[in-house]
Every structure is written in C-alpha cells, then in structure tokens.
Length: 460
Image 1 (cartoon, helix red, strand yellow):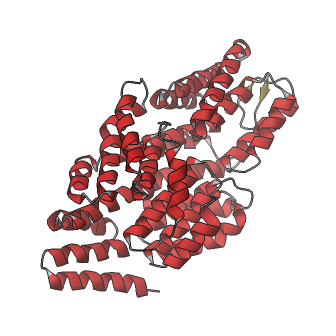
Image 2 (cartoon, one colour; image 1 turned 90 degrees about the vertical axis):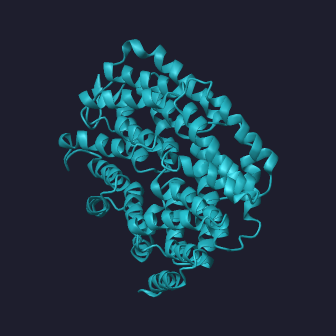
Image 3 (cartoon, one colour; image 1 turned 120 degrees about the horizontal axis):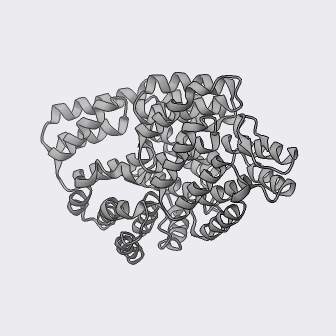
C-alpha cells in the first residue's frame, strides 16, 4: 500500500506507478496534452492498479462520445476484477464509474461527494463532481462542493491553486463575481498555466460586460496555453465573445479560423463552441460564408448520440441553419425516446431538450411566433441542460430575437429589461432594447437605448 502526494492510500505495485499516477492527475487538473502519456506510463508501470483502470474509464466518459462508451465499460469491468484488493475509497470510485456508465450522473456525483466527506483531498473526485454539477446546471452545488473541502487544503497541498480555481468558477456561476475574480486572479498569479482558472475569471468579465478587461486578460495569458489540450480552443472562444460584443466581427472570424475552430476536431465542445459563435454572428447580420457546412456535416452523423441534451440542441441548430430540416426534425423526434431510458438525461431531453430544439427549428424556418411559444415556458429550465451562463446565453438571445421578429415587442422589452438590469454594459442588449422600443413606438426611449450602446462601443 502506497500513498499519493495528497496523502491518500493507493493500491499499487511499486513507487513508479504512484509517481506516474500523481503526474497524470496533475496533468488532468491542468488540462494538459500529456495527460494521456502519463496514463500510458502508469499502465506500463502497473497494469493491475485499480485506480489506473478507473481513471481510464473516467477519461473515456469525459469525451461524451458513444464510440468510447463501450471502452469505459471495459475499464469498469477491469476495475471490478481488481476490486477485492482495493481500498474502500477505490471501490467507491468503481461504483461512481458504474453509475456514470449507466447514465446516472446524479448517482455518480453523489458517490464522489460521499468520497469527499471522508477524503476531502481526493482531487479526482472533486474535479469530476465539478464537471457533473456543471452539466446538471447545478451552479450552487458546484460552488458548495468546493467550499466543503477547502478547510482541508492549504498552499502546502499539491494542487491547492487548482482547487481555488474550481472555487472561483463555482462562485462565478452562482453570481458572486467579486469573490470569483479575487480568488481566480490570485490562483492564476500563483499558477499562470492554469487555463481552467484563467477561463473562470474570463467568465466574470463576460457576465459583467467588462469586455476590454477580458480581452487584455486572455491576450496577456495566452502564451501560457501551449501545453494545454483543446480546452485552449474554448478559452480562445471566450476571447471571441468579447470581440463579438464590441462588434469587432472581423476579429471574431479571424479567431474562429485560426484559434478556436479546428475543422478536424470531432470534440463536442469544439463543435458546440463553433455553432454557438456562428449563430450569434449570423443573428447580428454577419456573413459567415460557408463555415456552417462542415458543422452541419458533423452534426448529421451524431443525431443518435444522445449523451447530453446540451450537445444535441447545438447539433440541431447547425442542421436547422443549413436548412437540413429532415435531419433536425429526426433529431428532435428521437428525443422523446430517451425518456424511456433510465438515465439522468432522459427527463431533461423530454422536458427541456425537445421544446428547446423545437424552438430552434421553428426559428430557422421563419416561424418566430412558434419559437417563442416553445421556448418562453421553459426559459428558466434551460439551465438543466448544463453548460455555463455564457454558453446558455445563446438561447436567451434566440428567444429575444424570435420575439422581436414575431412583433411581440412588449415581451421582448420585458426580457431585455431583465437583461440590462443584470448587465448594463452589454451592447447587444441595448441595441435590441432599441429595436423593441421602436416597435412599441417609444422612439425617444429607443434613441436613448442606442446612445447607451454607442457609448459602450466608444468607451475606452
């Protein structure tokens, strides 16, 4: 019996395996490209280590792609075969992987949280719970999950600043922007290559409409991302959001082509990032050329995946924008079937995914009133598909745009009043407010809204 670098008992054959395990976990925390290399070295050092098989299964699940689901289950079976010699904590990880393989995200998360009650320095359990809370739309739980373990961590604990970064993101997603920024900036100062925490602070700037601050933050830190995996694309995407709000559309398209859309990538996050950005650009009247085609081509091959509703509605958007309505309708029609499966996502597909995708399809068909009818009743439930507030803002924009195009100006004005109250620094919000006020005949108020937008664009 050995211990990892955070003092947790670890079943292993030799010290080399433990060293490779530590290196692998640290690489995973840093979202680094060499994570897989450390995992291979771990298996070479000890192919019978239970946690090696468990972590490999977790990594397969994190890709959110059906072709790797079977591989995750194979690793689960291998881990179970080794379970008799494992610790109680390691066997709890096996049960968490089992729940996840069955599509029980709530059960998997509960197992990790149980592990953390007795082993608050199990940073793997902590990071995975952070991930699943995020895709369950559970912002407060994501924040509290980290807060519960913080008394057991200090600067002498390996990975401490990564954990502070998790805390920062949980605080940001639950609306405590001041604390999120302070903690996140300190963590990045101590660990400049930590791209997750860099991105947590970027979210603060997005939510507060501090777009120029965000541009400087990400531009200054970008040289540190060379060893990062494709999460760097997502962070470049955030830079694109700032330039989008500043109406620097050529810069957004340049970032799309050179930084965050690798057309060879089949990764769900890379694809959803691209879809979300192109839709925002198109809604603002920007010609995006033929960039939609490859996204629709990829999406059309994934209509039966049904891993997460968050992913599927993006695929459906690409298909609908490209007028591949047969494929988009087929994707929407297959969502009700998911409710007959015993998974966490099944009711989310049924109660949120279906109307949301239906609204997207209606919008792209030009039936804007129908889009409003479908999306308005579930707009407070959209968080259940997971993702961040910044990511889900795509669907708030769609609802507002649909209301304006359907001449439902009172409803659009009400939605925009909510938006500008939360973020008075958003150019898009003020411009759409002006459109709504024009529709209501409140021309003086519309002019003032346009002045607010112009002032924000010229500021700085």
